Amino acid sequence: MPQVIYIQSNGDRCEIDVPNGTSLMLAATAHGIEGIVGDCGGAMSCATCHIFVDPAFVDLLPPIDETENQMLAYTAAARTDTSRLSCQVVMTQALDGITVHIADPQL
Image (cartoon, rainbow, N blue to C red; front, side, top):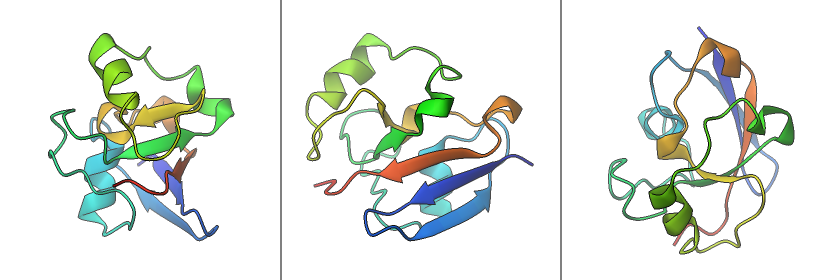
C-alpha cells in the first residue's frame, strides 16, 4: 500500500499507509492527523485541508481545476506554488512516498 508523509508546521512527521483511491484529506482525518480539518468533508467548499506538496511530487498530480484554484485563494495560510487541497489529491501507486506539509493555520 502506498505511503504518505504528513509534516506538521513544527516539523513533526507522521507516515501512514493510504489505499489507492483515497484522498489525502480522508486519510489524514481517519488517522487523527492534526491540522487537516476538512470541515466540508471533501466537497471543496471550505479550504481547511490546505497542504504544500513536496516539489518532487507536484508534476505527478493532476492539474488544479478551476474550483480548487478558486478555493486556494481563500486559504488561511498564504498560497504557494505547491499548494493543493488535500481533498483533491487522491492516492495512487505513483504517489507512494508523497510528502506534504500541512498549512498552518487552516482557520
